[in-house]
Length: 492
Image (cartoon, rainbow, N blue to C red; front, side, top):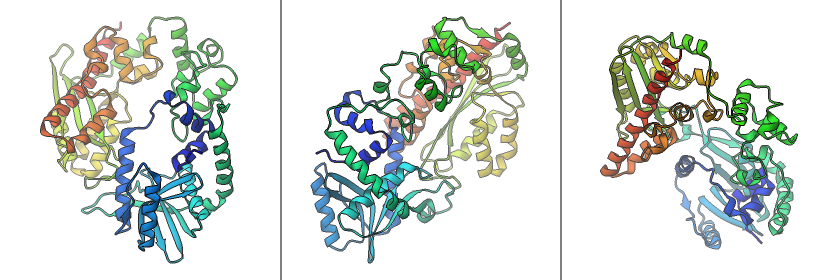
C-alpha cells in the first residue's frame, strides 16, 4: 500500500488523476515549481520555529519510521515544541511544521510563506489533524501561520508582527468526513492499473500548475486554445471552448471575437505578413521628446525583509540600465547601476544614481508602464527627499509596449505576446546579438532576481561572474528598446 503524505493528499484534492500519474507516469512529469518559491518556503519555515522559543527538531530521514520514533522519544521526554513531528496512521503520514504540546491537547501549526491563506492550505492542515485524531490525540487547535504582507521592517525585526496566525480548527472538523472519503478513494486509485478518466479543467491550473499538463493535452493540436494569450481570452472562456470541442486554431478562427486573439490565430493559419498601423505608430512616436532615456529596472524580493522600511515580497530595485540618445542622429550613450548585495542601503544608492543620470526633461522610455513608475513611487515613500525628482521621471515616461499590446505592430513570430522577449526577435529575426537565449547565465528577470540574492553566499570569483552577467542582461533590455525605437522610426 502506497504511503499517503500530506503533499500527496493535497495533489489528490486538486486532481484525482494527478496522484495516479505520480505513481505510474513520472517520465511525463514536467517541473513547475519555482526554486525561489521553494527557497522562500524553507526560510519562512526555519524562522517560524523561532516564533515559539525553544524547540526540538525531528531531522528528515528517508526511512519514515526513524522520524516517527524520534518524535515518540521527544514526546516521552516532555518536549513542548516539536518541529517536523512525524506521525503515521495506517498508510497516512505527515510531518507537522510545528506541534505544540499543551495541558489540554496539542496544537498544530502549518507554516506557509504565502501572504494569504489558500483553500488548499486548509486541506493540508486538516489532513494532519485527522491523522493525530485517529491516533488518539486531543486536538486543541489547528492553525495556519503565514507572512503578514503589511509588516514593515523597523530598526529591529519583530517576529511576532511578521507572522499572522489564523485558527482553522472549526474548518478542520468539518473536513473530517471529506478526508475519510478521499483517503478511501485514493487507496483505490493508487492500487488500480487503470488511469483515471479526468478531462482538462480548472484543476489543471489551480491551485498550482499541473506538472502533467503536457501529457494530458497530448491529444490536442500543436497550436490550440490554451496557447492564446490569457489577456485576450480568459481561462474560463478557454475551458468553455475546449469542452465544446472548439480548441484548434482552424475552428477558433470562426468563433473567437477578440480582435487580438484573432490576430494570433489568423497570422499562424495564413502565414500573414506583419500588420503595421502606420498612422497610430507615427502618432505615438510624435510624442517623444529628446533626449531619450531608455530605462529598465531589475528587482529582487526578500520574503523576510532585510532593509529598513520594506515589506515582505516588496520589489526592491537593485539595478538599472540606461541608454541615452540626446538627439535623433546623436551618439548613443550607456549608463548603468548595479548594487552591492551586502549594501543595506542599496535602494537609496540606486535612487541617487538614477536621478543623477536622468537630469533632463526628455522622454523616459520603458517597457510595461505598471513596473518602473510603481517602483519609483515606493522609493519616494521610503525616501521623501527623492519624491520630486522621481515624480518628474515618472511624468516623462512613455511605454514602448503599447504599440505591440494594441497590435499596431504585430507579426506571426510574436505568438500573441507583447513581451519584449518575443517582440525583439520578431523584429530582428537574423541578429543573434539580440537573442536573450544567447546570453550567459541570466536570460530573464526571474533569473536576474535570484542571481542577485544568490551573491550573498558566493565567492569573490563567482560574484564577479554573476555581476558581469547581470550587467549584460539588463543592458540588452534597454538596447532592445533602442532597436525597437529604430524599427518604429523607419515606418512611413
